[in-house]
Length: 439
Image 1 (cartoon, rainbow, N blue to C red):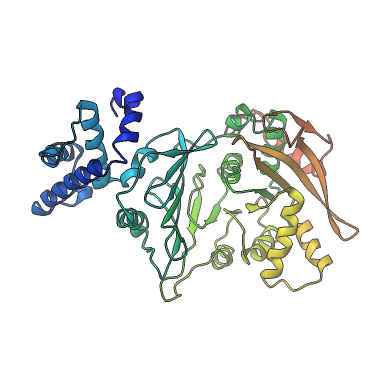
Image 2: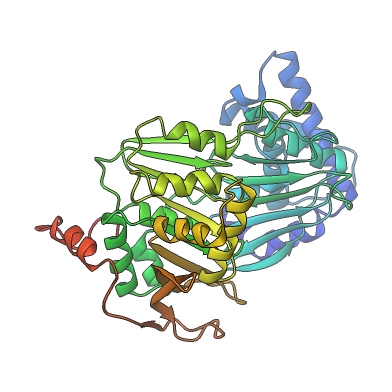
């Protein structure tokens, strides 16, 4: 993008032009001209090189503006040409935000409302879709290459973009006010443990402890609300896994960025229009147990697969990790009990909690604060059963959970329940930097 398009003028263009019906008409007239040209040449949109597209778009924009009252100057015309190119080879109005490294999330609420998250805060953008049909075309363009579809019979779908960004689409009649698209952007360079320390998400001591837990093959569950950074932390912790281990990941939309050489990535599949061909996380997890994994990493447990995940953790797959939606570390245990019951684990409550206490070693709870910051609130060890309740020992916690700006953390105990395993893990790294891997 040219430098002048980054200026205040660019903002005015977005504000004044994108919302203009005349501008939208000219843009789509240019798109039609380019598409007709490609059809005449029997060329596919994806096969056109950048220079060919630039020339074709430039001529098409000139033709589309002829006879209109849109008096566009040079930068404004450049902006329009980029918008047309995004319609041909990108995702329309969303492409500019997908290319913007400062944007973390993109949210579409109908054709006229687009929001983006920058630095943890949502902002409404002036960009818009031409109409509902335009919005639906972009939605189909996202899910189509994955063999999925979204319509009245399949009104919501999870998908991912080619760069790994996670997408959720919901269409009417489920989405009453129009099609919604939610995009969690995929970071090209994932955050490391060191990055999280610098951002104030945790302390150096917390990172050292968690690195030792991963190396010692403790089973870890990461809890938190939506957008609290669970997958980001899971990625960061995975860097401490030995490259000699065979890892299997199971996700609804593959987004984990594991760097080890021996990784098998598995992805669930939604049922088709007639309700068949579904591949659930539980079915994949059961099959994974036959694949000789050293560790199993499940992007999120949210259903009956929780039963198989716990069984894997207690049957030779030490060091497995997963995430779960919850409001606290204790709440994560309660939610897990509920998921196990839904999964058909029909045992009395004491036996159920004994299964949990025997499977999970460490709970990590994350929080997204009111100002958009993401941080670790608590790291707790599971210490078995005590009076029929799963006993937790807090190892680290944030000093004041109510203060969104604090980056002060407190170590509650110096003695871990898993001291021997942690010490063996540190000893096995003799001659290496204790926190050098992945930082």
